[in-house]
Amino acid sequence: MSLAHTAAEYMLSDALLPDRRGPRLKGLRLELPLDRIVKFVAVGFPLLLMSLAFAQEFSSGSPISCFCPRNFSIRQAAYVDSSCWDALVHHEQDESGQYRTKSLWPHKALPYSLLALAVAMYLPALLWQYAAVPALSSDLRFIISELDKSYNRAIRLVQHMLKIRQEGSDPHAFWDELEKARKERYFEFPLLERYLACKQRSHSLVAAYLLRNSLLLFFTSATYLYLGHFHLDVFFQEEFSCSIKTGLLRGETHIPDLITCRLTSLSVFQIVSLSSVAIYTLLVPVIIYNLTRLCRWDKRLLSIYEMLPAFDLLSRKMLGCPINDLNVILLFLRANVSELISFSWLSVLCALKDTTTQKHNIDTVVDFMTLLAGLEPSKPKHLTHGMCDENP
Image (tube, rainbow, N blue to C red; front, side, top):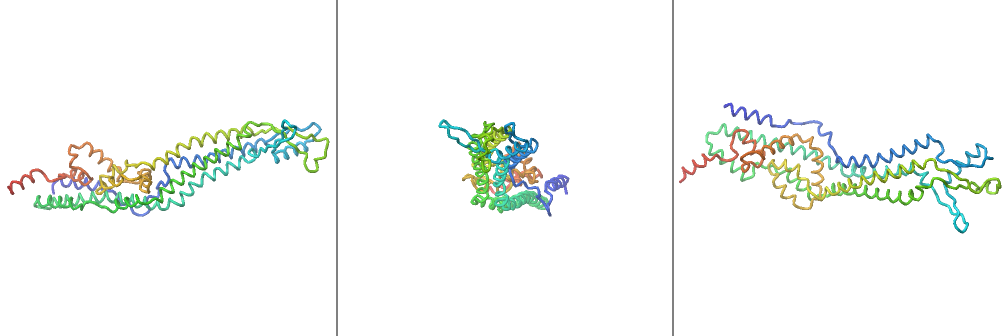
């Protein structure tokens, strides 16, 4: 056995990926990075604001301060604060002298509306978790495993070719068999390629992804409507006139008709309203960008894996509408590229392929590894000329 042949065998053995058996791929990312950021911000921010509202309420005591008459005792003043906060209705006199009322309930409902907003924003992620994650996880495990296996099969094929070339005595017979195998497409492993092609006719994952982001846009729009309709009406009102002459106190003459109260928590209310509008306004372009990614193919990953046999057909099949499950799977494969051991090897081979002087002879990893192992990727010219001389 020659030294060059031994070196080629060592090089090919090192290129083989380790066989990963048992528990693996536990760290699959089943949410895209931008989707995870949107979920954390959309759900976590209202919870943060809710804790701020509750903390302000607990630290400062009563959220309102009423200006009671001086003849009121401390217990009567506390009753006025409690009664006005429970009612939270502003009484104002119109031009005709009639009293009109305006409810200030958004101040009281602020922490609970933030909790409802957080729950609503978590529903799309929950829908994705139960409707799409099980199928997506199964698809990713199979595809990642098959991509690595396809790479290993290509390397083992080159090892087998090198062994046959070393043991064979007739180089013409070896190259004839090699050319025949290439024409008969023996070097292709179409199972994965056909499986991915089938995913172009499936739309369950893309429907779940579209529904998730559409619900986020819908809940964001509902938040804008709620803030604009209810919060804006009471946004600048710091004082209101409260009436406590109800029930048994209706006939009491020493109690004034209206008592002026001040909302001590107005600043917190304004900060929550403005920050909510600002944060969700920033999230809208991110959500729209996530949706627009489904309108174009992500070919960066496949441009690397086209070096595997049979993946050249996949590029031609990607000319149709990109809104299907295959495009979603490609996005998640890109996010889980760290789980693809073969990706780094193929990236290096693609970089070397672009710099080699024999680009026209190298199409797949089989051709490139054949060249690195010391074999010509096609029949040497001297053998071709020799056959021409024997058959004039």
